[in-house]
Structures are given as structure tokens and as C-alpha cells.
Amino acid sequence: GAVVSQHPSRVICKSGTSVKIECRSLDFQATTMFWYRQFPKQSLMLMATSNEGSKATYEQGVEKDKFLINHASLTLSTLTVTSAHPEDSSFYICSARGRSGEKLFFGSGTQLSVL
Amino acid sequence: SQKIEQNSEALNIQEGKTATLTCNYTNYSPAYLQWYRQDPGRGPVFLLLIRENEKEKRKERLKVTFDTTLKQSLFHITASQPADSATYLCALGHGSSNTGKLIFGQGTTLQVKP
Image (tube, rainbow over all chains, first blue to last red):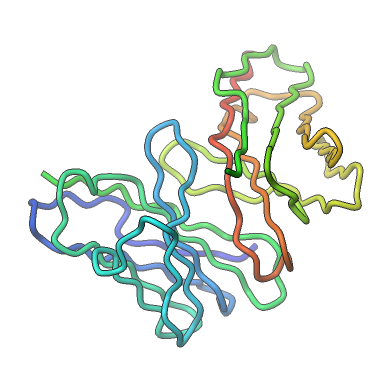
């Protein structure tokens, strides 16, 4: 099946620093990528939808200046958490959908811990 | 507001039995529903998709039903195995299944004991 690679899998950073998370579709072209955030034992919360070559669409309550999303190519999307604070600590997961696909292919997630 | 409910309590069953997980929703009219499996510290993995005009879908030991009147989907795993232990998420979508976004339930954790 299609593979989505997400890096890094875990990052620990100091408060105030910025963290970039990469999401790559390895064997298909991802026309749409989604970024989710998940707290322990809770649902995946959709943060934003990004289409290749256009600006991301953010869900209500998600700060676009805080969570910068770039989808520069059909195989790569990045999420940058700017000036991270402890409350940004969470599990971030990307997913990708190809042109003809119905299902989502998920990355393995990134556990962000902000000290 | 739209709401998706899955059993928050873990489901514990004996190996070989059938596991049944429930997904209920309110204030929503999804065009399709998907089920995913998520292991700890990992991203979800797609299992099945069922559309609003379909009553039932099967894949190997998995069976999904979709009742738009009851606003409910049931997910069955027959002849369950310890390897089936994981969290199972239901997700609802509307519009074209190729372009629409998915809204996820909080998941139900299944524990299959040998």
C-alpha cells in the first residue's frame, strides 16, 4: 500500500523555539494532505487541509501564524510550530490522499514535547 | 454541533469471540464512513469504507454496517485474535470521498485476551 513518511518521530525542544515536521508521500502523489493533532486517549483533531501549490485551509480555532503549513510539492508537506510553548506539546499526525483515493494514508506521527 | 461517539471504555474479549464496536453520530449526515486501526504511538491505518447507500461491507474477518436512520455504524471482528488488540477509530465524511475531510471519533480500545 501507499506509504507516508513523517519525520521526526519525536522531538523535545525548549519553549520559544520553532519545530518543523515533514510529511512525505513516498510512492504516490498527494494532492491533499491533512494535519491532525491528538491528545492521549482523545480523537484526532483536524488542524488544517493543504492542497499542493495553494494556501492551507485552517480549522476554526487553529492559529495559522502559529502552525505554518507548506505544501510545495505533490510529495511533501511541512508543519512548522512557531515559538512553541508547553501547551503545544502533543502528537501531530499527517495524512495524505492521492488523486483517485478515498482512504487516507497516515504518517507514523510526531510526538512533540516542549519544555 | 456535530458529534461522533464511540465507546470510551475499553472492550475486553476472549480470543476467538466476535468483537463489536459502535460508532454513533448526531447532527451530521455523512456520505460515507470509514474505520481505522491505530496502534499506540502510531498513525491510523485504513480498514474499511462504507457509503450511505450501503448497508453492509465485509473484508476478511471484518464487517461494517451503516444505518443512516439510527445514525450508527457497527464494526465487527470475527474470530478475534490477540493481534487485533488496538484502538479502532470511526471517521465520517461528506461530499466527494476523494476530496472531503474526515471527522474522527475518539476511538475504542479493543483488548483480545488469549
